[in-house]
Length: 292
Length: 332
Image: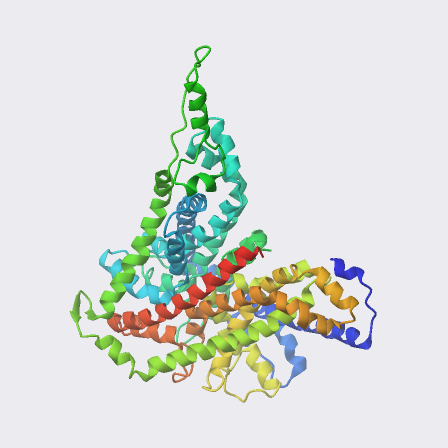
């Protein structure tokens, strides 16, 4: 950055600020990572060990946190006794299915919207994006009534359809930005060489492929992490990981170890995927308004 | 000869065909040909808008089925008393009742309180963090570490924090107590602090987004302006407020709108943390709506509440899209 070239003399004030900012970053990191650490560590603790805590004000007692014998009991419990492998498959199918449908249909629509102009285009566009912005609970009231009459409640197709309500508009909106960046001349060149329109469309797909891949992942992330749709539309036959995790919370006898282990099972794949698409994350999470 | 520009905008604007090369070829063919010209084996089909509309159709139709159709259902339901399998007209009673429903009105107030508390903390911390991180050593690694909470399912985040807040074995509760901030009651158990409890979780999860957005904005602050200001003798603090911050306003506006709408959209973590309690201290409108519709199954009333919530969100969305458009024309 150019501003570094301007000589800036160290004054007590700037040095103080540097110190302060270092401390602030450190504190913030602790605050941000601590809950995740607690989740991971608690998932390996036996029930009684998870409840151990020092007396109020006993700062030296913090070590109790690391004082335990790790056990895989909870993970075994989840997959052997509690059918978590099926919930995981449900999550995978529902999230993956809706992501693939959304991105395929979305890229076709986004390509068209990017290439032609027609009256009412901006209205159509606003309608598309407004379906994405609608509060989940508000959308769910009529959707639940409709799905119930179609017997889609509690089935995976119903859940895939429900996730498509927010993934499809997202895909169209984001991918249009991608296609806008591909010059039309490339398709023209293809067509001059004798390609059909559809072949020309297929020919430019490699140019947007990384973006499309990233947004399949992002759609999976949104759907995987969803709770409300899964709890209402998927209840019963299509239980996903977040719902199953939530159900471990019973009024009495809360199995914290299992809940934390379920949390890890739900969270870990998405954290890894998030790192893979790190470059597209800001674009995706701001609906394309901010690019890194 | 007619113009032979190939740019799609030009030809489209006049409603003519997209692809002019063929016409040029036709013109050439129209001349007396010296010898036979072989027909190309396959001609490009004449491109038309119809082709694009067909390509668009599946997505639009599907979206209509899962958004417009339910929308009309919502209007229909909001005007009826809905029971399983039956709906009876009730003279706008669902709506008129809303005006006297204190929990509904309080739900709005709490929703705005919640959103504003979240936003104030997130913007304050997020922007400061971005400024401090910008150009720092290990910036990439640090930012990646900060991203982690955003990847977590909100429901899991809620559960983990529920554990941390727990009055008997929660580590944060122990910390708050040891610091003398709380008495024996957990933060979620007291009506005065419960709201802060759910706000903190949202702040924990989404402040990194504000930081990321601000970092992206900071990279685009014109360095020459900063330098000119510095050469003129401005202090770093002055530099921040008179150059950096004004340049950040557009991205910050986007960040604010996005978070504001997400606070309307998602209630997952609040639902597990307090579920609206204690009493009704954290019963923000979406939670109240969730209860009315899916706990008491008053779908008609729920639809009426949902409609009002939807209208407000759509108005917010319109503002957001306006901002987006301005952004894109400015090429930020």
